[in-house]
Length: 489
Image (cartoon, rainbow, N blue to C red; front, side, top):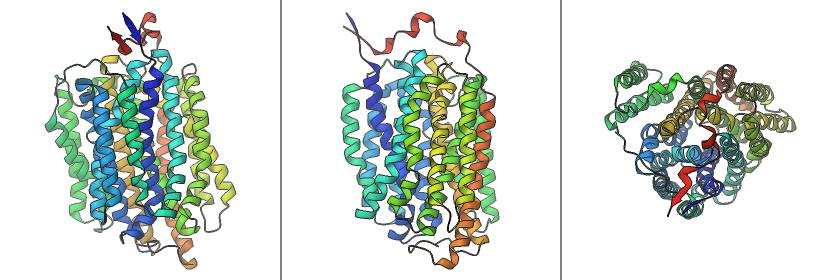
């Protein structure tokens, strides 16, 4: 006898773990000033709290998607969840900036094991014509985490200290683990070859590139810094050339990029990951240091973005199953770009907070048209056997963009502060003196043009998306079945 389980239960269980990853990322964004003060450190070092996490998140994704195909996405997801939860406890107990950075690196490894499994499972348990709706729920979870993370984080920081933003992951992680064991199906596996040396080469190239970009200003862009950056780029280029020659399951199957939407989707998600990281760091420093808002109050300024995005994402997900993707995505990226430009104009020492709330709502409308349709469009027309590798590449691209955005905004902020005559430790001791608020806000808003540029890249990529051809979809009979969820008895 054959029975089928409801895929929506599995999606709900996966969304709890996905929610925790995003909650952690958004909480840390609002906590940076408190961490700077609490651990007596400066801006370049506190940026490493984010960059270390993103780096160890990004690099293993090339192989963790394939590991899920080989050993089962359920078990990789649960293993990553256990690592992430344990590392969260370590983060809360860290007594120095070095210990916190190390714990965040381990957290990133856990997230790398989890993230591709969520997308791969969605791709395998939902029929082709329902994936947009499933991705809409997935995108709605991102919006909720964006809302809850900064606000909840602000409350925790104001009442108990920055350590509690990590402690909160422990109960959520335990609940997510129990739900995963219960509801996520054990899907069929397939054997794979794993290019561990290739992954090591990528790690070396990415680490050199990120360290060079982020620490360049601290070392006055010395010759060895430029050697690290150029060397990292050369290593990554050689890796891609080598991947083009590998016939037996390369880490990056370059043939996937013959699919136009997958290629454009990777360009857009990489630029979007960089843009989001580059936006949040200066925005929260501005609201807390220049406007003297508490972490909770600063988070509430961006609450409309998260509320609107969470409400609209499921509806936009369903719409993306019926409307050519270029229209929805181009609108979303264009509106998001315009809203960020408006924030740049508003972010002065006495800019209107109510208008910033309106700006935040516009960002929410724009982001709701991005988070669900973008991955659905990038992956929709790919064959199921390649879903694990494709989702791994897609997630890798987004996280590589995020880590480069973190490194880039760290370097740009340090450079702009120096240009305005400010030390990189400005804001460490709390609110700024009135005399330096104008140059400080100018340095922060100058750096936000990096976000604008990256969002423009996303909008241009979205214009060239195509509507997936009917021939690329699974056969009609397959559209209404979910064979991977069937249990044979």
